[in-house]
Length: 434
Image (cartoon, rainbow, N blue to C red; front, side, top):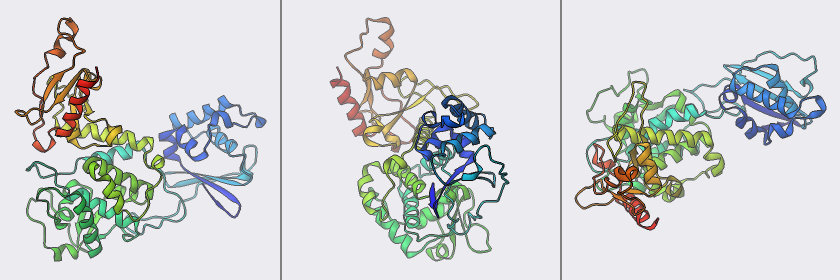
């Protein structure tokens, strides 16, 4: 919502309204439609809510839905409501309220180019849907990695954090990201915060190999992409890379244009790869982050949770780390959950070594501190211990008690074994809960 020359404009992306329903209208209008329906024009609360529901859930942009929105805004003396979908707009103005004879015709929106300028006029960008966030967070949570070594190399997520930083500072304006000295310096600043062991700040590796993740491509003007799928050779020289430019998938690039979405993408990368270094990374930011409530909205949080689940299930091959249950149907359905070892609300840590794949029974038992994966000198991934609340003499509890001393079924890659601090957290809460 914004004002111009005494007129209030409300721009709603019609597809977002259809996808998200009443919450998106409440977030724009800052009121509950059930409490705000103006009775003086015969629109009672129940019909108003029904109109919103009909608009959102059934996907029918009928007159009732438009009436409900315009009636809800009637407290504003002058307003224009713009609904936009599939390249068309329908505009309502203050004198176009229900009962007037005004007619409305579609008009094209302001033009934008995903490969071109970031400036798309004064029209606010639509908010990403949960489906959009789900798709991109799953891909960002599962960047292709070197399967060797005991930890994940930080290069790719650091490159993405660096590009988001340059976008925040308006140092990248087009979907043509050059390997500039400023990008190299920014990369090194972030890298120094998160580096481990023998990590080297070689930006040419992620700048080139990020192409293997399917949403980034490096090209020289008028030439074929430098990276070819399946190419495991060394990256080109820095001179060659400096003469090219990286391009993001248009949908991801579009998502990066909103400051709030950039902040959410940064939060996702930090949550997945660098939760321990969150304060240091935040100290590097030159542009303040949006308010946390705006940054961590429901759509983002649900998509983040889904991305964490998918990551953990793939790492554990859809197998319960306690009992070995593995059920995966052709449509991708699995009976196994993804569980945090240290609860997410305490650390905002989505690293795979803070997670386990568990069947619903063992997930619930662990969350209730009836069982716990604990450190063990002989088993790097830990062993299961049973709390004092369980009794082997009770028939229904024998299977859980029998788990005591059994090793945690570990993932294939050692770098994803449960972190020792996460196992210790579970051990401490197993012994202190009862």
